[in-house]
Image (cartoon, rainbow, N blue to C red; front, side, top):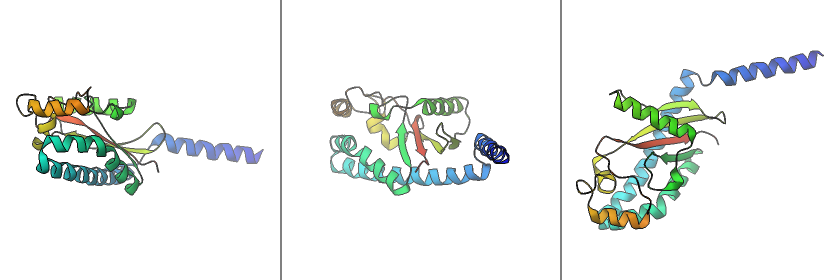
Length: 189
């Protein structure tokens, strides 16, 4: 009987600890790690896209992104032992569709921006109990060539090339500083 009561007590303590989530110290550490991973992944991907843009503009960069973006993300995920995803409400690649938690975060960041508030990365425990980093992806001027407003910052030729690769593309119409999407990084490995 004492063994059963002991097991029940330990189970309740562990359950209670899990329900409390991450400490502020843990969250801060995961924010730091998440930023590092997001920045390294963006640097790798952005560097490759910039090279292709210099080599031949959108006609070289868009096919490169189409063929290699997922592999580059997977490479960084393996390097850091995490799961990395970029997602948005306006998708270019349907495989990057947001899950229910990511939809909540997208709306949270969108609301904060609409209210004129600063958007910062957030770490929460996800449905599986793992620490999960979410950070806004804001539109940079150089990205408008492929994601901008058609006829303004984005040329019709670029749109045509992109539509050939991504027939259901919705990732356009952005202006500099707009919320493009989020980084979603799960510390689950």
